Length: 326
Image (cartoon, rainbow, N blue to C red; front, side, top):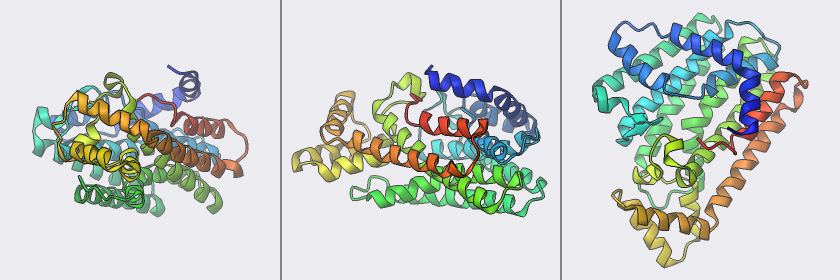
Protein backbone atom coordinates (compact mmCIF):
# COMPACT_ATOMS: atom_id res chain seq x y z
CA UNK A 1 0.00 0.00 0.00
CA UNK A 2 1.37 3.39 -0.97
CA UNK A 3 2.14 6.01 1.67
CA UNK A 4 -0.48 8.32 0.15
CA UNK A 5 -3.17 5.64 0.39
CA UNK A 6 -2.20 4.92 4.01
CA UNK A 7 -2.44 8.62 4.80
CA UNK A 8 -5.90 8.93 3.23
CA UNK A 9 -7.25 5.82 4.98
CA UNK A 10 -5.88 7.03 8.31
CA UNK A 11 -7.68 10.37 7.90
CA UNK A 12 -11.03 8.91 6.87
CA UNK A 13 -11.21 5.60 8.76
CA UNK A 14 -14.10 6.80 10.94
CA UNK A 15 -15.98 8.09 7.89
CA UNK A 16 -15.45 4.78 6.10
CA UNK A 17 -16.79 2.90 9.13
CA UNK A 18 -19.89 5.13 9.14
CA UNK A 19 -20.35 4.59 5.39
CA UNK A 20 -20.04 0.81 5.79
CA UNK A 21 -22.71 0.80 8.47
CA UNK A 22 -25.01 3.04 6.43
CA UNK A 23 -24.63 0.93 3.28
CA UNK A 24 -25.79 -2.12 5.27
CA UNK A 25 -28.56 -0.38 7.22
CA UNK A 26 -30.05 1.42 4.22
CA UNK A 27 -30.22 -1.67 2.05
CA UNK A 28 -33.27 -3.16 3.78
CA UNK A 29 -34.39 -5.29 0.85
CA UNK A 30 -37.76 -6.98 0.75
CA UNK A 31 -36.31 -10.26 -0.48
CA UNK A 32 -33.28 -12.30 0.57
CA UNK A 33 -32.35 -12.73 -3.10
CA UNK A 34 -31.95 -8.96 -3.55
CA UNK A 35 -29.79 -8.81 -0.42
CA UNK A 36 -27.59 -11.66 -1.61
CA UNK A 37 -27.03 -10.21 -5.07
CA UNK A 38 -26.49 -6.63 -3.87
CA UNK A 39 -24.14 -7.79 -1.12
CA UNK A 40 -22.14 -9.87 -3.60
CA UNK A 41 -20.80 -6.68 -5.16
CA UNK A 42 -21.43 -4.11 -2.40
CA UNK A 43 -19.20 -5.92 0.08
CA UNK A 44 -16.57 -7.27 -2.30
CA UNK A 45 -13.88 -4.74 -1.53
CA UNK A 46 -15.16 -1.52 -3.09
CA UNK A 47 -13.33 1.69 -2.19
CA UNK A 48 -16.46 3.61 -1.03
CA UNK A 49 -14.90 6.57 -2.81
CA UNK A 50 -18.12 8.16 -4.03
CA UNK A 51 -19.89 8.27 -0.64
CA UNK A 52 -16.62 9.39 0.93
CA UNK A 53 -16.47 12.32 -1.50
CA UNK A 54 -19.95 13.35 -0.40
CA UNK A 55 -19.02 13.31 3.29
CA UNK A 56 -15.75 15.19 2.74
CA UNK A 57 -17.55 17.76 0.59
CA UNK A 58 -20.04 18.31 3.41
CA UNK A 59 -17.19 18.63 5.90
CA UNK A 60 -15.23 21.14 3.85
CA UNK A 61 -18.39 23.28 3.94
CA UNK A 62 -18.59 23.01 7.73
CA UNK A 63 -20.99 20.09 8.16
CA UNK A 64 -19.88 17.39 10.62
CA UNK A 65 -23.22 15.69 11.26
CA UNK A 66 -23.00 11.90 11.36
CA UNK A 67 -26.25 11.48 9.38
CA UNK A 68 -24.32 12.48 6.26
CA UNK A 69 -23.21 8.84 6.03
CA UNK A 70 -26.79 7.66 5.58
CA UNK A 71 -27.26 10.02 2.65
CA UNK A 72 -23.87 9.11 1.20
CA UNK A 73 -24.94 5.48 0.72
CA UNK A 74 -26.95 6.77 -2.26
CA UNK A 75 -23.73 7.02 -4.25
CA UNK A 76 -22.55 3.51 -3.44
CA UNK A 77 -25.92 2.13 -4.51
CA UNK A 78 -25.90 4.10 -7.76
CA UNK A 79 -22.37 2.90 -8.51
CA UNK A 80 -23.22 -0.71 -7.68
CA UNK A 81 -26.36 -0.62 -9.84
CA UNK A 82 -24.28 0.60 -12.77
CA UNK A 83 -21.76 -2.22 -12.25
CA UNK A 84 -24.48 -4.88 -12.16
CA UNK A 85 -25.92 -3.56 -15.41
CA UNK A 86 -22.49 -2.97 -17.04
CA UNK A 87 -21.30 -6.51 -16.35
CA UNK A 88 -24.39 -7.95 -17.99
CA UNK A 89 -24.21 -5.66 -21.04
CA UNK A 90 -20.49 -6.36 -21.46
CA UNK A 91 -20.80 -10.10 -20.83
CA UNK A 92 -18.04 -9.74 -18.23
CA UNK A 93 -16.83 -12.70 -16.18
CA UNK A 94 -15.06 -11.11 -13.19
CA UNK A 95 -15.66 -8.10 -10.96
CA UNK A 96 -13.48 -7.27 -7.94
CA UNK A 97 -11.88 -10.70 -8.17
CA UNK A 98 -15.19 -12.58 -8.02
CA UNK A 99 -17.53 -14.08 -10.64
CA UNK A 100 -20.03 -11.46 -11.82
CA UNK A 101 -23.49 -11.55 -10.24
CA UNK A 102 -25.43 -12.54 -13.35
CA UNK A 103 -23.23 -15.63 -13.80
CA UNK A 104 -24.44 -16.85 -10.40
CA UNK A 105 -28.07 -15.66 -10.14
CA UNK A 106 -28.98 -15.11 -13.78
CA UNK A 107 -29.55 -12.05 -15.94
CA UNK A 108 -33.06 -11.17 -14.79
CA UNK A 109 -32.18 -11.18 -11.09
CA UNK A 110 -29.04 -9.06 -11.64
CA UNK A 111 -30.96 -6.45 -13.68
CA UNK A 112 -33.80 -6.24 -11.18
CA UNK A 113 -31.38 -5.88 -8.27
CA UNK A 114 -29.69 -3.02 -10.10
CA UNK A 115 -33.12 -1.45 -10.60
CA UNK A 116 -33.87 -1.86 -6.88
CA UNK A 117 -30.65 -0.06 -5.94
CA UNK A 118 -31.51 2.83 -8.27
CA UNK A 119 -34.95 3.09 -6.69
CA UNK A 120 -33.47 2.86 -3.19
CA UNK A 121 -31.13 5.73 -4.02
CA UNK A 122 -34.02 7.97 -5.01
CA UNK A 123 -35.97 6.92 -1.92
CA UNK A 124 -33.10 7.96 0.37
CA UNK A 125 -32.71 11.22 -1.57
CA UNK A 126 -36.36 12.14 -0.92
CA UNK A 127 -35.81 11.75 2.83
CA UNK A 128 -33.33 14.63 2.81
CA UNK A 129 -36.19 17.02 2.09
CA UNK A 130 -33.84 18.97 -0.19
CA UNK A 131 -35.29 19.31 -3.73
CA UNK A 132 -31.84 19.97 -5.21
CA UNK A 133 -30.56 16.65 -3.85
CA UNK A 134 -33.46 14.77 -5.45
CA UNK A 135 -32.82 16.65 -8.69
CA UNK A 136 -29.11 15.77 -8.55
CA UNK A 137 -29.80 12.03 -8.10
CA UNK A 138 -32.36 12.02 -10.92
CA UNK A 139 -29.85 13.80 -13.16
CA UNK A 140 -27.12 11.26 -12.34
CA UNK A 141 -29.32 8.28 -13.25
CA UNK A 142 -30.32 9.94 -16.51
CA UNK A 143 -26.74 10.80 -17.52
CA UNK A 144 -25.37 7.39 -16.54
CA UNK A 145 -27.99 5.70 -18.70
CA UNK A 146 -27.18 8.03 -21.60
CA UNK A 147 -23.49 7.21 -21.23
CA UNK A 148 -24.19 3.47 -21.34
CA UNK A 149 -26.40 3.83 -24.41
CA UNK A 150 -23.81 6.00 -26.19
CA UNK A 151 -21.05 3.50 -25.39
CA UNK A 152 -23.21 0.59 -26.57
CA UNK A 153 -23.96 2.39 -29.85
CA UNK A 154 -20.25 3.00 -30.45
CA UNK A 155 -18.73 -0.38 -29.63
CA UNK A 156 -15.95 -1.36 -32.04
CA UNK A 157 -16.31 1.97 -33.86
CA UNK A 158 -12.87 2.61 -35.28
CA UNK A 159 -13.39 6.33 -35.86
CA UNK A 160 -14.54 7.18 -32.33
CA UNK A 161 -13.12 10.61 -31.53
CA UNK A 162 -11.52 11.88 -28.34
CA UNK A 163 -14.43 14.29 -27.97
CA UNK A 164 -16.95 11.45 -28.12
CA UNK A 165 -14.88 9.42 -25.66
CA UNK A 166 -14.94 12.38 -23.27
CA UNK A 167 -18.72 12.58 -23.48
CA UNK A 168 -19.00 8.90 -22.60
CA UNK A 169 -16.78 9.08 -19.52
CA UNK A 170 -18.40 12.30 -18.33
CA UNK A 171 -21.81 10.63 -18.40
CA UNK A 172 -20.73 7.21 -17.13
CA UNK A 173 -18.31 8.23 -14.38
CA UNK A 174 -17.73 11.94 -13.84
CA UNK A 175 -21.37 12.93 -13.36
CA UNK A 176 -21.61 10.56 -10.38
CA UNK A 177 -18.47 12.08 -8.82
CA UNK A 178 -19.84 15.56 -9.45
CA UNK A 179 -23.20 14.64 -7.94
CA UNK A 180 -21.61 13.18 -4.81
CA UNK A 181 -19.57 16.33 -4.20
CA UNK A 182 -22.45 18.68 -4.96
CA UNK A 183 -24.79 16.74 -2.66
CA UNK A 184 -22.28 17.12 0.17
CA UNK A 185 -22.36 20.89 -0.34
CA UNK A 186 -26.19 20.86 -0.51
CA UNK A 187 -26.49 18.87 2.73
CA UNK A 188 -24.16 21.38 4.39
CA UNK A 189 -26.24 24.32 3.16
CA UNK A 190 -23.21 25.76 1.39
CA UNK A 191 -23.14 28.95 -0.65
CA UNK A 192 -23.50 28.80 -4.42
CA UNK A 193 -19.80 29.40 -5.09
CA UNK A 194 -18.86 26.48 -2.84
CA UNK A 195 -21.44 24.19 -4.46
CA UNK A 196 -20.09 25.12 -7.87
CA UNK A 197 -16.47 24.65 -6.76
CA UNK A 198 -17.17 21.17 -5.41
CA UNK A 199 -19.16 20.25 -8.52
CA UNK A 200 -16.16 21.25 -10.61
CA UNK A 201 -13.82 19.27 -8.36
CA UNK A 202 -16.00 16.18 -8.70
CA UNK A 203 -16.36 16.44 -12.48
CA UNK A 204 -12.62 16.88 -13.07
CA UNK A 205 -11.71 14.17 -10.58
CA UNK A 206 -14.19 11.78 -12.18
CA UNK A 207 -12.71 12.34 -15.63
CA UNK A 208 -9.17 11.77 -14.31
CA UNK A 209 -10.30 8.71 -12.35
CA UNK A 210 -11.86 7.10 -15.43
CA UNK A 211 -8.82 7.84 -17.58
CA UNK A 212 -6.65 6.22 -14.92
CA UNK A 213 -8.98 3.19 -15.00
CA UNK A 214 -8.61 3.03 -18.76
CA UNK A 215 -4.83 3.05 -18.40
CA UNK A 216 -4.94 0.26 -15.82
CA UNK A 217 -6.65 -1.98 -18.36
CA UNK A 218 -3.36 -1.98 -20.28
CA UNK A 219 -0.84 -1.71 -17.46
CA UNK A 220 -2.17 -3.36 -14.28
CA UNK A 221 -1.78 -6.84 -12.87
CA UNK A 222 -5.08 -8.67 -13.42
CA UNK A 223 -5.04 -10.08 -9.87
CA UNK A 224 -4.78 -6.60 -8.40
CA UNK A 225 -7.31 -5.21 -10.85
CA UNK A 226 -9.89 -7.88 -9.97
CA UNK A 227 -10.69 -8.53 -13.63
CA UNK A 228 -8.84 -9.57 -16.76
CA UNK A 229 -6.60 -6.94 -18.30
CA UNK A 230 -7.66 -6.08 -21.80
CA UNK A 231 -11.32 -6.34 -20.83
CA UNK A 232 -12.21 -2.99 -22.40
CA UNK A 233 -10.96 -3.76 -25.89
CA UNK A 234 -12.25 -7.34 -25.67
CA UNK A 235 -15.69 -5.81 -25.04
CA UNK A 236 -15.28 -3.47 -28.01
CA UNK A 237 -14.77 -0.35 -25.88
CA UNK A 238 -12.35 2.14 -27.38
CA UNK A 239 -10.72 4.22 -24.66
CA UNK A 240 -8.27 7.08 -25.01
CA UNK A 241 -5.05 5.00 -25.19
CA UNK A 242 -6.39 3.08 -28.20
CA UNK A 243 -8.08 6.09 -29.83
CA UNK A 244 -4.83 8.05 -29.70
CA UNK A 245 -2.76 5.10 -30.99
CA UNK A 246 -5.14 4.59 -33.93
CA UNK A 247 -4.71 8.23 -34.90
CA UNK A 248 -0.91 8.10 -34.63
CA UNK A 249 -0.15 4.65 -36.06
CA UNK A 250 1.22 3.91 -39.52
CA UNK A 251 -0.98 1.85 -41.84
CA UNK A 252 0.52 -1.52 -40.83
CA UNK A 253 0.20 -0.96 -37.09
CA UNK A 254 -3.25 0.55 -37.49
CA UNK A 255 -4.43 -2.58 -39.31
CA UNK A 256 -3.15 -4.73 -36.45
CA UNK A 257 -4.93 -2.58 -33.83
CA UNK A 258 -8.14 -2.71 -35.89
CA UNK A 259 -7.89 -6.52 -36.04
CA UNK A 260 -7.61 -6.69 -32.24
CA UNK A 261 -10.65 -4.44 -31.83
CA UNK A 262 -12.75 -6.55 -34.19
CA UNK A 263 -11.66 -9.91 -32.73
CA UNK A 264 -12.60 -10.28 -29.06
CA UNK A 265 -10.96 -13.73 -28.95
CA UNK A 266 -7.43 -12.37 -29.39
CA UNK A 267 -4.69 -14.22 -27.48
CA UNK A 268 -2.14 -13.08 -24.91
CA UNK A 269 0.54 -12.59 -27.56
CA UNK A 270 -1.76 -10.29 -29.52
CA UNK A 271 -2.51 -8.27 -26.41
CA UNK A 272 1.19 -8.01 -25.56
CA UNK A 273 1.85 -6.69 -29.05
CA UNK A 274 -0.94 -4.16 -28.62
CA UNK A 275 0.62 -2.98 -25.35
CA UNK A 276 3.92 -2.47 -27.17
CA UNK A 277 2.20 -0.40 -29.85
CA UNK A 278 0.54 1.78 -27.21
CA UNK A 279 4.01 2.45 -25.82
CA UNK A 280 5.50 2.98 -29.29
CA UNK A 281 2.98 5.68 -30.13
CA UNK A 282 3.14 7.16 -26.61
CA UNK A 283 -0.61 6.79 -26.14
CA UNK A 284 -0.23 5.69 -22.51
CA UNK A 285 1.87 8.73 -21.64
CA UNK A 286 -0.53 10.97 -23.60
CA UNK A 287 -3.52 9.63 -21.65
CA UNK A 288 -1.66 10.03 -18.37
CA UNK A 289 -0.80 13.65 -19.20
CA UNK A 290 -4.43 14.51 -20.02
CA UNK A 291 -5.59 12.80 -16.84
CA UNK A 292 -3.01 14.68 -14.76
CA UNK A 293 -4.27 17.95 -16.25
CA UNK A 294 -7.76 17.12 -14.94
CA UNK A 295 -6.31 16.27 -11.53
CA UNK A 296 -4.74 19.73 -11.39
CA UNK A 297 -8.04 21.33 -12.42
CA UNK A 298 -9.80 19.42 -9.65
CA UNK A 299 -7.28 20.58 -7.06
CA UNK A 300 -7.39 24.20 -8.22
CA UNK A 301 -11.17 24.28 -7.80
CA UNK A 302 -10.66 23.83 -4.03
CA UNK A 303 -8.68 27.09 -3.74
CA UNK A 304 -11.71 28.95 -2.36
CA UNK A 305 -11.82 26.75 0.76
CA UNK A 306 -9.91 27.24 3.98
CA UNK A 307 -7.02 24.80 4.64
CA UNK A 308 -9.04 22.38 6.79
CA UNK A 309 -8.48 18.62 7.08
CA UNK A 310 -11.25 17.77 4.61
CA UNK A 311 -9.63 19.98 1.97
CA UNK A 312 -6.27 18.30 2.46
CA UNK A 313 -7.87 14.87 2.10
CA UNK A 314 -9.72 15.86 -1.08
CA UNK A 315 -6.40 17.10 -2.52
CA UNK A 316 -4.75 13.80 -1.57
CA UNK A 317 -7.57 11.82 -3.20
CA UNK A 318 -7.05 13.78 -6.41
CA UNK A 319 -3.34 12.90 -6.38
CA UNK A 320 -4.09 9.26 -5.52
CA UNK A 321 -6.33 8.92 -8.57
CA UNK A 322 -3.21 8.75 -10.74
CA UNK A 323 -0.96 6.52 -8.63
CA UNK A 324 -3.37 3.77 -7.60
CA UNK A 325 -2.93 0.21 -8.85
CA UNK A 326 -6.61 -0.85 -8.67
